[in-house]
Image (tube, rainbow, N blue to C red; front, side, top):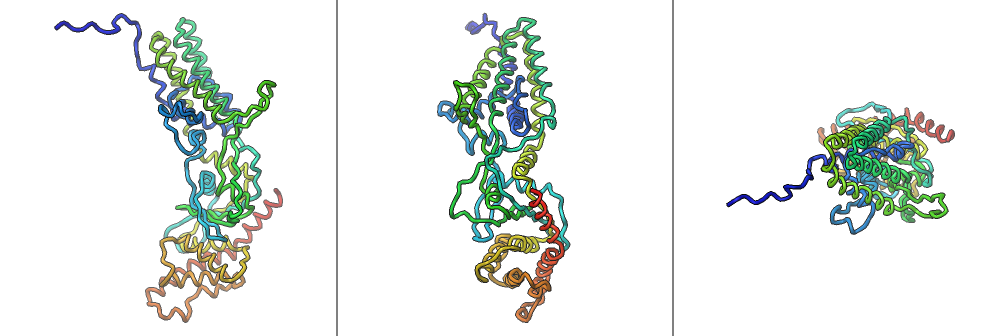
Length: 460
């Protein structure tokens, strides 16, 4: 049987790998675009032929919020514009309201607050050392929810002119050899990336004000992380910003053009425009790049390589650290201290001391219940209903309810402890030593930290 004639044998079309480059380098490109809201003027520096067209189209299809693209690019949650730009998606530690004992989940801003606390200079509190844990203290002030998030000066980031110049030069080189396929694809890539960066950069990040709830628990409270516990006190609006707030991209921008005055740029409008650009680029790039000359294809790859290296370098920045820094600048740089304690019982006692040092209880029973609730929350794996741990917690609560007792007389083994075995007495004595270390440090040193908070408030 003679072989069949080769289909498309007379075609001059060559399907080479340069056309599928749109499927690579997407994560680095998206990470680079995420910096548009972190640096002032960064939105003007996206005019280069950027790789990862498919990833861009997938992310912006979610932002466009239309069912037409759901089959090709399945929807995600939380809001994709924030998730795609690395501004959401991570949960913070659980928050315990000190006055009511209510526990609730927190979001990305609480996660950033805990991350920020780890950058504060650590103060080591003397005491027994077994399993060190950090106790951070944050004194929040009022929050202006209408103020946009601060940005770093553009000088803090490497110049985006390098990939822009390389893309422009390669585009011109393709035009000089009359390779209009490669020329048009490089030019379209520059336009799509530049317009998308500019349009997304038009919005400003803000802290979304939580919906007011009459049943909301007032501060103080504590964020219980795995290796860091963050005590939050101060203005209720400031505490809510950390515990219940989140970032939002404010695209409610009014143009000065008389035809467009009053037009609000929504997520969907921004996403639809960027989606159209990248989808068009994606399709044409697959079809036209193989039609270009070898020289033009090399120029196309050179422009993508330069852009990828720039995007990769930007993606190596610790964006969460930058976001935490800008968040606290926007919040007015509230005072934060970080202390390192050697044991979890000592941590629990110190947290209670810091939470309730200026709280007035309506009755003694209410005060005891509040403090016992925080101790149990800080030590969730301890059985506080019986044995040595119950005796220890009772003594600690008694001492917490007696702030004028500087001799710490409640933190001793008394006659009621005679029934304990020698092993139990040794354990109780050890635990009481942890509690005494926390109280003694507080009595000797806390005035210095509380006065620094007051001085900063006076300056503000």
